[in-house]
Length: 156
Image 1: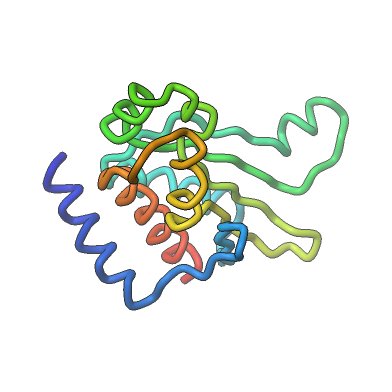
Image 2: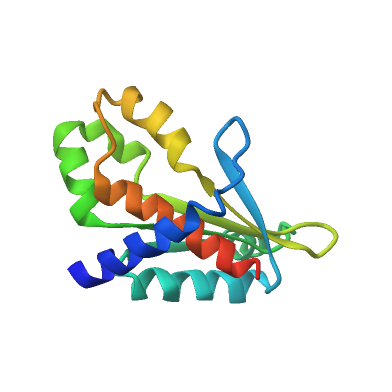
């Protein structure tokens, strides 16, 4: 497990050359050249390979369909690391409202697929102060960096 995080840390260092472009609200959005289902499957596989836990995959389009409503493909992936999140929740249980980390993958009306997630800067600026936590633990920062790396890879 430690070896995987070391590998992830190395990949994150490489990302410094290609930083994520986040909107002022912290939302990083990237295109994917795959379908929503393929993109979600790739992200989940890569998360697991990197040692993260995929807690859930919510298919909003399927839920809408089951309710008789039409929605373009839209999937939410909840992921994280109990080693990173548990100490934060022990310090400030309210952070459980904002964790685990998330990817949203969707197809727009033109058929293009996108991935979005919150940037590390945004989470450090807003999430931690919101819950009275002084600084972002390294494991959480690496997990967010992993989100950036994986979403960038899906766009290639």
